[in-house]
Image 1 (cartoon, rainbow, N blue to C red):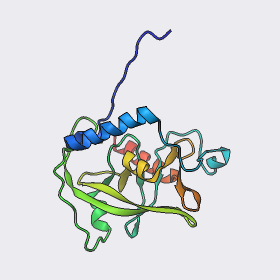
Image 2: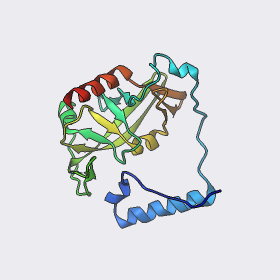
Image 3: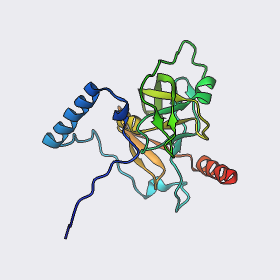
Image 4: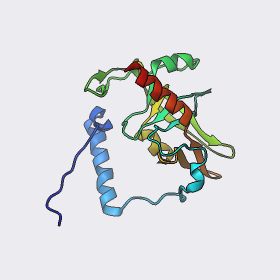
Amino acid sequence: MIQGEVKTISRGSILDKDSKTTKKKYARQVYNLYQFGQAKPHMPMTFSTEDYEDVIRPHEDPLIINPIIGQNKIWKVMVDTGSSANILFHKTYCKMNLAGEQLEPCNEAPLYAIGGHPIQFEGTITLPVLLGKLPYTTKKLVKFYVVRIESPYNAIFGRPFLSTFEVVESIPHLKLKFPTEKGVGEMRGDQKTARIIMLEDLEKD
């Protein structure tokens, strides 16, 4: 028998940084979702035992991919469903040779790291991101928040990225799947790099 109900919100929301107008628009979308139900996906995206190929199991490794951002292949990009923003670290931004690309000023409220420490933005930048391998590729524009902090990663894809690309992820399979014009595309996680990063973190402790 159910004796009660507990509803929680964890790790904050991207709405914390937005205006009242944006929050009202989002609230209307939530209302429509409850009224009419969620839209069905374009095409089925499923995972099977074949998707475990080359994955060392069992594991608790993060999902790290190596996509094309702008005109660069960027290694060590973590996919984090707990992040409400797409993050590009300043050290990476400086190495990308983004001729003519300027950071846009950002006056939004800061993000908060573990421990409640605020992270100020250097600015924002919108860049094309390419996922997949031919012929199953897709490219979309992604807004990044540029931050100047140390990280073993070059960038972090948060929930906005997953929504933009309509990504379905599987941590056990260390793989992303997403719709493309030719069918279902996929990107496999880089488990070796994920484990190297975790080992380096352990050595620092």
